[in-house]
Image (cartoon, rainbow, N blue to C red; front, side):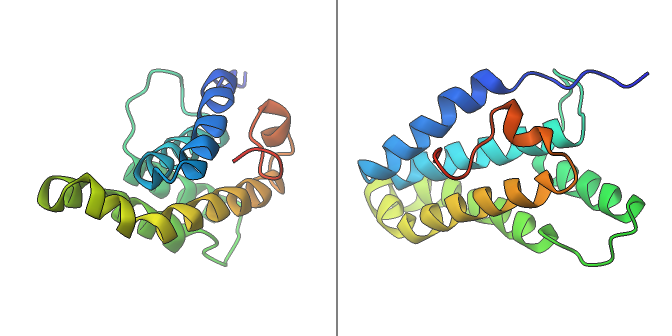
Length: 144
C-alpha cells in the first residue's frame, strides 16, 4: 500500500506569496530562505517522506539521486544545482553573523532571484515524473 503524501498546501500557499512579497520589498535574505523551504517541501513531497520525519536537505538530495538512479535516468539533472543551492544557504547564514543583515541582504539579491528560477524549473522537471506536483499547490508561473 502506497503511503499518502503529506499535505504541503498550507506551506506552499503561505510561503510562495511571502517569497514574492519579500522580493518585491527587496528583502532578499527572507526570499532566499523561503524558496529554500519551498524546495525542501517539494523534495519531501516528491520523495514521499512521511510527515514529521526529520531529514536534512543534504539527505533529500541523496534520496533524490537514488530515485533518479532507480528510474535509470543517467543525466544528473538538478543534483549539482540543489547541492550548490544548499551550500549558498549555509554561506548566507554565516554571512549574517559575520557581516550583518544589510551587507548580506545586498549581496544576496542575484542569488535570491536565481533561487526563484531554479524553483520554477525544478517544479517543471519533477512534474515530468509526477504530474500531481502542480495540482497539489506548487506553482511556477503565477506563484513566486
